[in-house]
Amino acid sequence: MIQKKYHKHNYYRNTYAVFKEVDPKDLPFSVWQYISKSGSSYYYTLEGVYRLSNHWGRAAKCRWVLEAGDEMYVSKGRVRIGYAQWTDFYANSESTKSYFVKVDFKNKVVSYEHKSRDKNKDSVYRTAKETQKIIQKVKRILLSDAWAKYYEYEDLERLRIEVVEDLIYSS
Figure 1: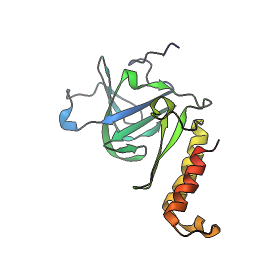
Figure 2: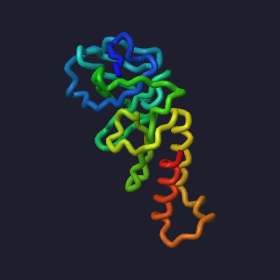
Figure 3: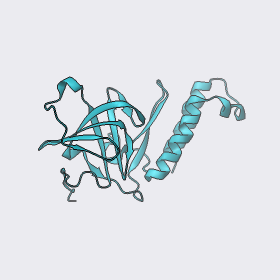
C-alpha cells in the first residue's frame, strides 16, 4: 500500500498527527513563518513542522494531538509548542474507522490515537465521532461515582476498570 507523503502544502488537509512538545528555548529559529486565522503559528523545515498554539485536538478538519511528556494533550489551554515530522502525519477521514481509545487509569485520563500508532494492534477502531462518544462516557466513569449506584460491587476502582474496558473493547 502506498502511503501519501505530507509536506507544508498539504499537511493541514484532513490529517492526524502527534506533535511532540518542544521547549521554546530549544527552537532553531526566531520568527514564525505563518500565522493562521485561529492564531496558531507555524515554522516549516524539510523534515517537519513546528506549531505554536493554545488549542490541540481538533483543528479544522484535522486531529492534532500534543504529546507532553507521558500525557496526550488534546484540549484548549495555555500556549504550547509542538513539532511533528512529515512522516508523523496520517490521513484523517471522518467516516473511516481509524481511531482507538486509550485510558490511563492511574491518572484518570482518556485520550485517542490513530490506528497507525497502535503498538498492540488489539484495539477496537472507530470513526472520529464514535471515538468522541466513547471518550465522553469513559470520562464520566473515571471522574464521577454517580453511575456506580446501579451496580453491586466491593471494589469501586476494579469496577471502574471493568466498565471502561467493556466500553473501549466492545464494537
